[in-house]
Image (tube, rainbow, N blue to C red; front, top):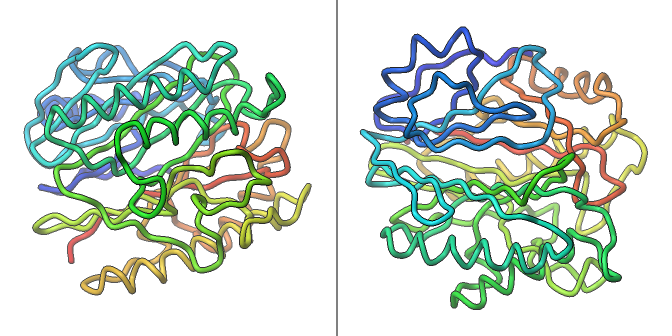
Length: 338
């Protein structure tokens, strides 16, 4: 499965996955409309425009073999800057930002402080609606002070939502939280001037309604968000795994977990199409990022994906998933005209 280079459509929020050899042809466009660059396991290439926000995530790339950089493109000429610890870019409709905070032994506090800063900054810039957040930090499944770090992260995140007078259920951004090999709490995000429509999955209990067995505070995210503009619809699909209702299925079986995850994605897209009314997305309309737990073989996951998405653009990364029994997690982004 290849990550083909696709030139972003005019006026569309889009994401590119580019190899080093593909960058020169698009540097002019990235300099004009680029919102940010993310490298996985390696730093984003040095040849990118110097003002472009960039972030390195310590999740090694598994496939394709040649390193790629994730580039987010805005709808028109971008304005860029740095405010405090936030590197940012905006295009008049969308705000992209990157943040890094020392995770240390108190991930709850680090998360709360990071989200506090994020909410203050986005509001002051005039982009108060958080649409999508990517969260990465080391030791996600490790227990500290009697509580798993992922559950501590959820406490800190929800505390920040409440401190900012934001809802803890319903109108929440799409999100993921993955464990890295090392490094800080690293976050990147997309916010908007207008609110996104949250989408939930009929096969899964909404994460913000999880019972106390999963921690003292529920995860603060929607299964997907749909963002409309004048002539485009963008969809951000949260990290999705082999969970039915609120229970993990098929422990130890990567192939079965991948099939269950694909069923969840299909159900989510069906719900999304009912919400959007003016367009119809299919599984093949999205670009995918697949996280695979360290030590899990990639081949059974690739085989299951190839059977359903033979021509899809897929980036495979090695990362710890938020539940110990989960081996694979899939996220997606899609954009098209109504």
